[in-house]
Length: 139
Image (tube, rainbow, N blue to C red; front, side):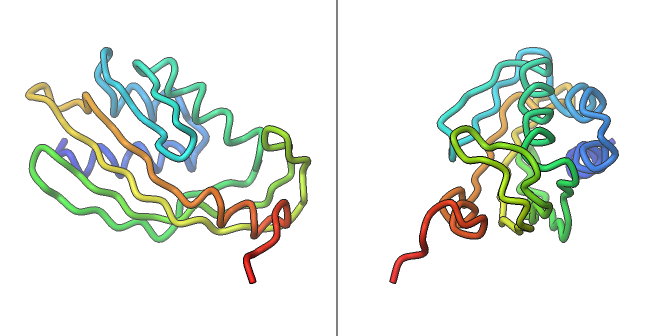
C-alpha cells in the first residue's frame, strides 16, 4: 500500500467510525502526531484513537469530505473539510446544535516500514468557534 493510499484509508476508517483501524493502519507504534490548533502532541496509535474518539463527543455526525492528497514521497499532505453538527460539548462550550464546515490540512511522514512516524494537523479553530456562535465574528 502506498503512502497516499494509507492516509486515504485512514480517513475512510474515520468516516466508518473504525478508529482503531484508522490508527493501526496508518501510524507506527512509536509515531508522534501533533494537533497544532490545540497544542497537543500524541504518542502512538492508542493516544491517536482517543483523539479521534474525542471528536465524536463534539459531533456524532462528523465526516471527512472533499479530501485531496499530495504525494511527496516520504511526505503526504491531505487537505479536506470536516463537516458535522456540534451536538455535544466542546471543552467549555455547550452543544450549539449548529452545522459546521472546517478546513483541515494534515501532513504525514512515512518511515522505511511504510507506516507514518510523524503527523501534523492544522485547522481553523477560531473560525469553527465563530460558525458555532460561541464567539462573535470580528467586525
